[in-house]
Image (cartoon, rainbow, N blue to C red):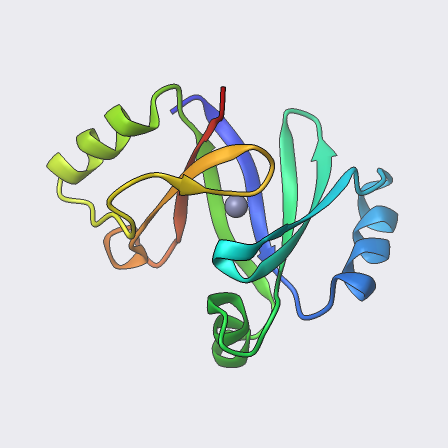
Length: 133
Ligand code: ZN
């Protein structure tokens, strides 16, 4: 894996959280993007080499909304950038990790993504991501 690409934080309301993170990080939110397939709205901040991604569920049935109902707002996932997402998915599946999607799917910020089941990673949801070319 190349680096920590971003850290995902589950929030209830981007309208509240964007100004808070702008004040915290002293950097403007450079992009908000809806990911229809995941029923989420996202907001991104650059912080050196890494980004912070705020994720808000778009409806009560979305995965993020259910997560917040159960565990409250907070740290949701760590995303690692990979050079070849197909090769990395194959490598991790062979090593015994459970992939939450069999094929890379469309993520926010021009990425192909795949999530690993947190039961294999001490409760941490891991995202693999690769820039789409
Ligand atoms: Zn993410």
